[in-house]
Length: 399
Image (cartoon, rainbow, N blue to C red; front, side):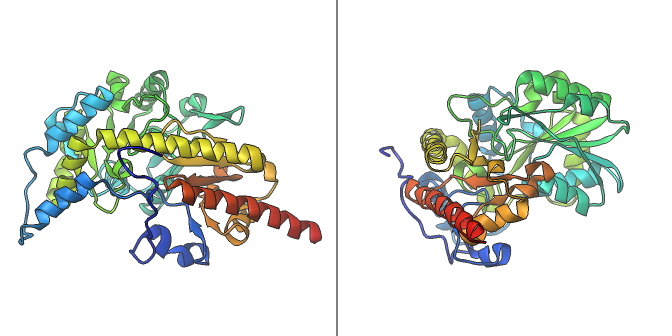
């Protein structure tokens, strides 16, 4: 692909401490797998972020640091230009990671045994963080229509009998990649207010809409959403810097903001490591053209994946995402249970994908493929899947 940036460059990640490659044996039982699972990309972090960090490294003292003057303006301008979202400076706070932020909200706004509503199949830390904090997970599964697209089950949300707690909303949806409509979010906000549910909107993939689609921040959908929610954002997925913890929260409601941000401040969780601010400012001030080129490459990779399975392995169907670099693979036509499906991918295809079952029982029959990699690497993963399925069938037929 000819572009301003080289997304075709192969970078060896083994031995760099990367979770994706250096924990394969621990996670999958073998380390000879091609890694296409955890949601970071195999593209180099863009030069303008690396250069900003190098510039700071030229100063030999790394003492206590303060928030740079341009930190909040950079966030405000980025969100306004990209999403039309008007954010006030006082609405923003650094947080030390979105999953950590979810755990913090759980502890600040609920007590053990309280309800936390999630809508599976969904990002598994929503469930895990809730459970490990001693709260009650309330599952309201998404509805999948015509085996293509996910929708919120508003009827079941309306039927919630207990009042109070939290609702964690994946926007855009992970793993399905759905961008929710304004109408859907308006109705969700109405129900959340009625049921006294504070909404956490995880918008970490918000800056990666594909094929000309537009992401609408949950808080922009209605006044009810604005006044009864906490939004978590980060440049980490878009610019491939999850190792530089750069998350931030946005809260408009003063009462909610004072309670949460007061707790963050009391425990110094609102104070960022020096490179978090630097990376965020560089990404948001200089990164839009890189982001556009990246998304074109991701679109091409998704199309490549779709075409490959249609041609070579039609039993596996790709649910085309509206956003991000994660492809949700519907493998149900292979007619395997989840244990067999994982065994096929790991021990026969020798690829590491995310087990769909980790996103809830509604994810069984699915696998999540990370296509955020050079096209040459993607082809190798796809060919291994094809060969693995064929070998698996041959073995089963011989049995």
